[in-house]
Amino acid sequence: MGAYDHRMNADGSRNPAGGAYFRLDGNVLTPVINGVTVANGLAFSPDGRTIYVADSMTRRVDAYDVDLETGAVSGKRAFIDLPQGIGFLDGATVDADGGYWLALMYGNALQRYHLDGSLDITLKLPFSSPTKPVFGGANLDTLFITTTKMRVGKETPPGFELNGGVFSCQPGFKGIADTPLVD
Image (cartoon, rainbow, N blue to C red; front, side):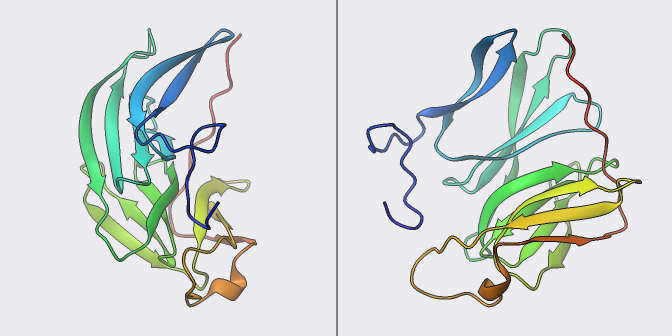
């Protein structure tokens, strides 16, 4: 398998758009969003009524409405179409104001988007491959960022030597506490 060769099936074959996002109903997995090749960027709005999902291969993040009573997902709409040349979309989180933070693997950056999908902030990073931002700390005002040493291609991007660790910063925003699961 190559450095960025996503194989989705147990037998090693590719199945473009053959994946799905699932909801856990008791002990049963229920597919709610189909047609995904490489799932990433999963996050919920602070009120839980919007789910953001990404497919790294299409470079797109979509937003859906979530019915809080039934868990049904509907109203698919484009949220972000990531242009070529600024990295690959990876993990994401949402802050208390509803801003969507997206890790740009091989892009040396995190990007924060407004509720309408417009770019708000690009936070340049000294390492090349952020994989997942998450808010933590006593006041949920520290943004922790995981990274990977995985390579794409033969070139070594600037900051590659710093990859593989966990970093933190205080970007001036606060996260939201996770909601405990109900039995």
